[in-house]
Length: 349
Image (cartoon, rainbow, N blue to C red; front, side):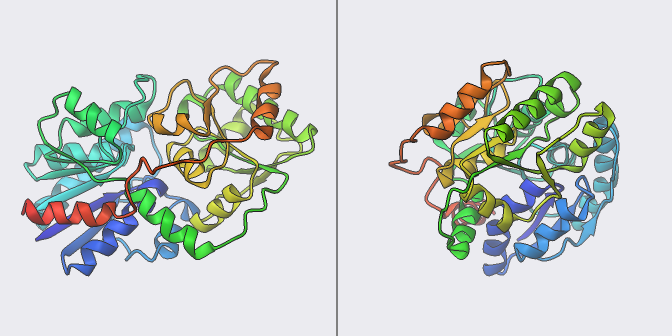
């Protein structure tokens, strides 16, 4: 059995780690292809090293560019590689541009396409990721749903492929690294913030409000720690937005982001993955979006904030001071999602 795994961004690398380990433990022939969508070292290669994932066999080096440009480069460069390798399964995790380009190529070439993290839905057509994940799901032969809600979404949409509830491989790697860190939760006087979505960072008005809110939080005596995505940094410079007392730092590795998250009083983000990690860490989370694909997190500690107004700082303060309910059960599987996925692949071979 030959498997090709295609990644291109930080979240894809993270959620693939336990799957790679499981595939290799079963002596399955595995090739990893990196599209090069995240071309910055801190956003990509450092995660391969930290997560102890074997280096990619090939990097498509698609680099910078618009969405259509990057998609066309992925499709063009990947076609020859897939034809030469002729894999039994092409694994595509997540909902990124890399996932869409890879999924479309594999599907059109007749290879068995496997979508990891299938069925997530925010129902927000303005998000590129929402369109990506729907197209990939309806092009896939095998679909691995991370939650039961995701499985229900797939069933309601009558996807043609075989759908399975496996749990979330990102939860697998979270449990592994959280145990390794073994740090004592101090809940320091800090707020962790990450903002990277196009709908936010390419809108000058939204970014001014988001940074303005963060600056107001610093006036309350909290340190706002802001690991900045390269594109976010570029846009802030373009819009001439001052960070004032916000502690802007370079992108950090996986262990560091978990440590920051575990020791923060609250998370402000627009990231899908960090919403889940905050949920698993029991850290209050404010998501700067009008909807989320991870509705499970709304039951516990995640609040959506689409419109930032003068009263938002009061709402933030209330969230910081509030007590959150402890989770009674895991909604993202039991930490063995990768084992289930590999078992399913072997049964379908």
